[in-house]
Amino acid sequence: MEDKTLELMLSNGPVLGSRKRPSEGNYEKEKEHCISLFDQWSEADQVEFVERLISRMCHYQHGHINSYLKPMLQRDFITALPQGLDHIAENILSFLDARSLCSAELVCKEWQRVISEGMLWKKLIERMVRTDPLWKGLSERHEKYLFKNRTSEVPPNSYYHSLYPKIIQDIETIEANWRCGRHNLQRIQCRSENSKGVYCLQYDDDKIISGLRDNSIKIWDKQSLECLKILTGHTGSVLCLQYDERVIVTGSSDSTVVWEVTTGEVLNTLIHHNEAVLHLRFANGLMVTCSKDRSIAVWDMASPTDISLRRVLVGHRAAVNVVDFDDKYIVSASGDRTIKVWSTSTCEFVRTLNGHKRGIACLQYRDRLVVSGSSDNTILWDIECGACLRVLEGHEELVRCIRFDNKRIVSGAYDKIKVWDLQAALDPRAPASTLCLRTLVQEHSGRVFRLQFDEFQIISSSHDDTILIWDFLNVSTNGQSEGRSPSRTYTYISR
Image (cartoon, rainbow, N blue to C red; front, side, top):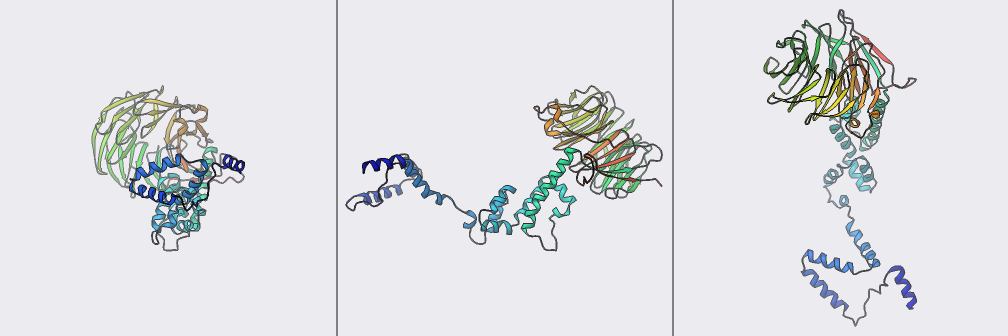
């Protein structure tokens, strides 16, 4: 008997006797006395006492207590909610990501019911559309992702559950198209009568507005690519432009003109610079222009017809080719090889960024990051300290235009268009050979003057009098070699 008891103790820990105690013992009285004392203690003292008891127990006893506590600690908070409080459960589960939401549906039928009736897959997609520009862009281009109130019956939660992976697949396809350079090409032939070339452009989902070397501004339908309107009035080439929902502002070798965006009516003409206006930016009641005369003009825009000169900034030793600004800084780049930073509020000089060996043709500034292009290379800067973060090498000719978003830098040069990995460029450990994602097939026959891009496309203009739309969303790969899809050409002939 003793051998069997020892064997059990070695294998399972101490042998626990029966829960029943001899009737003549004092166990019941002692137990009740201990419980009575326990009930009189504070919660902290109770916890300390139980911890000391547990520390004196063996492994088998620990397992027995764990089995007793486990069901007490596992609570289904969804099922435990009183009737009529499903909205609380829906609100809690709405914070889950897609993977967690899939797992939650498998917990039990009650959780599945709450997720289904709460339309949580629909809400997840709506949240992604609100917070991610790629999702938002897809929703605007594919109406199936829009969630506006409709008179028709709303699809069930299962529809949105199956829709989510389809959107993910669309996103993966778009990213792959960018990496591989696969695109559908659309071409607008401007057919200028005299001087040829498209110096500047801006676009939205409905239209493309372009400034041409022949002194005109042409507005194109974004879908049909037909010319909707021609604005005339400049006596020199239209070198820069920007528009919003109310006005178009254009800069030329003669002046700066403000146009009404829908009618094309001239609202204001600003004559200040002694030479050509090379670039301009406006936002939130402020406009900044720069010129071949080496100066920068800061304007207050109370309204399209009430624009007054606030300050003239001087300091560059050559033509100021480009400006950009936000609430904190105005940034200017010049043919004198320098980038200068000025205070937006006071217009006082802050610092100079030195590093380019040739004149700087283009620049974009956002948050702390400045990206500039020249005929030597492209440089990323930290505007706060003036440090050079990275040099991008690859273009063999002048980098005339450059834009970046959260993922990519797209640069247009006199030779070609390149797509760069912005996040890799900001990582000092990333090898230089990994930074250029793609060099696009040369489609322009002349110098690339200007480009803009979003998650789905690049739109570029050139000295060859064309505007190209590089579409990475609607790509047909049937029978096509990598990097190019069939192109459509639209020719505009002046009347």
